[in-house]
Length: 249
Image: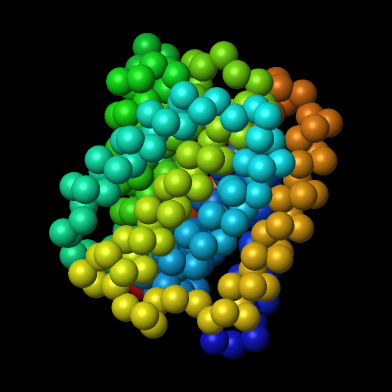
């Protein structure tokens, strides 16, 4: 792995951990887009899962008083159900498919009519959300934009949204690490990052998360929800453009 690629990975890890600590999901989407553009898909899935597990786990710890554990429980059960169904599937999506899926997810979430905005705090909806999001996480590498659909009509503060989603996403990334790191029929030990690269990425993730928490504490709820949608759609457009460019080659 070249020094340029390593620098890109560490810079993206720091920047996206900072962003995720503020908005709760957008960093994972951007990081997956970066990794999928410079690494083999399976390797990108494993590295992304390990980095995001650290980022989300630490973010959940920083906001631990605001976690809604009833929602997390429903999502976790849904995760297990989805993993059970996908356990015997052997697949590794190509780079264009991953980038296109990542780019379209924010627009799918944004385009859903208001009456279909589901409330994740309701147990049946939480189970469904957990299953759908972890399946999307395994197929596209990140399910944050889809998870956000289920938080649109929940009466929570920005800290509760960030904290609860951090725990839920950490569970999703554990599923992805297990799946692409050994459970999937296409898994290989070559897909795992070196120890020193992982260590450096974890440090960058912790630093970015800590800095982002300071910004979140100063932000207003209205600003939080407005900028989440704007950035989400902007990133989606970039990833779609990247996928279209690769198709044209």
